[in-house]
Amino acid sequence: MSVCSEIIVLDAVFFLLSVLLSGILTYCMIAISRRMEIYDYPNGHKTHSRPTPFLGGAAIFISFWICFISLFVLCGDKLIDSMALFWAFFSSSALIFFLGLWDDFVDLKFYVKIVVQILAAVILISFGFKIDMLFIPFWGALSLGWISYPVTIAWIVILTNSINFIDGMDGLAAVIGITICIGLLIIAAFLNLWMISVIAILLGGALLGFVFFNKPRARIFMGDSGSLFLGYVFSFAAVVCPIKSYTAVSMFVPIVAVSLPLLEMVTTIIRRILSGKTIYQPDNHHIFHNLQRFRFSEKTILITLGAVSLLFNAFIPALFWFDRKQVFSIFILFLMSLVGIFFILKLGRSTGRP
Image (cartoon, rainbow, N blue to C red; front, side):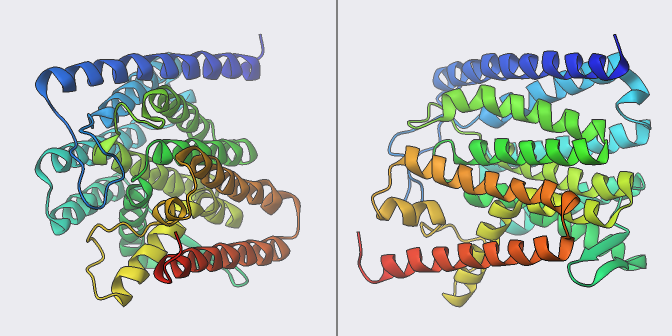
């Protein structure tokens, strides 16, 4: 059997293992939560109407790392070329997961979460992993120098929180997470990055096993422990891709994969600032809230937003195959169209439409 065939078989086996393990652990978390009465209770900005367990993030985190460590033991440096990268990834992602778990139980202050997220970014940087080059569309690659430190920290903090901004409806964060994993898998195939493909496969499998219990009406939520962990893994991949590839396109394509949650995050922050609210104050004016006011069902919203996120992935191979300036132009027009749709939905809400 060739090396390529062995890799494909290993990926397939561990994908199925991740799905199975995540499903079993999610079921266990539901049982534990009910026995110990650990619930997320409804309030004004949440869409669920009954107390629901919120330990799904633990199932995602544990299943991902059991599979990742097992594959690492089997393959060693074929998967990760240095122990520094392994420990940087494991320690920083674990810190983010436990931060989210702590927040699920205690409801931490915004600044506490930011400080811990910065610490996770510093851990990654301390192992020598940071964004040294920044690719600006229509301009080119820019060497950052010492600015690479604050840029890396800001990028990790922003992406870590991006999934949390869309985690407000049954199944939505998991579905969008799966589409992002597909995008990362496409990136890994073009840049020949097996570690990124493994991350995408194992995380996608963990989300698939979880979403069976998280689809409308959800029997369990992933909580902040899950959404922050997802966001951090995506930010980690976005830092590692350009480090391992050193091409201009590798600096940009990870952003394409996470464009939908980033777009929702940016528009939400702008909306809250313009309305005089703090950027971390929860509300019920997200894109999925506005679609619900237009009487879209949760299933329709999941399919629609999942399809939009998949459309972003179509730009990834296009950046490798076609003229990049043309692809960037189409990408910007697509973003502007989505911003316009977001605005129309909000306008319809504010003028009293159902």
